Image (cartoon, rainbow, N blue to C red; front, side, top):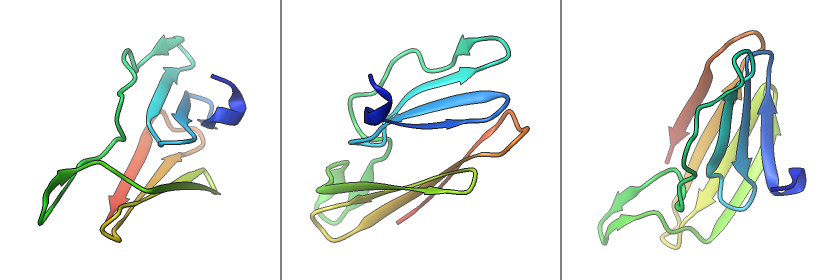
Length: 102
């Protein structure tokens, strides 16, 4: 997949790649060991939400916004809900931080 089709975050320890159309994590690589930590790319978005009408992972609109040390991902559902995930790779840290809110 080309760079224009992905959202990429990288620090000294990790390289993270997400699909620009859906936010799905496609690759998480430990740069020191060159170990790929994602062995199977999921076919659906990285969340499921229980609503009054049942479980859903369907969305109508997806956007991403670059922020210092990361990216904010937003999915908007047909029910008018917004799922927001802040993904951060802090400089010098071998950890990825995911914070999600609805």
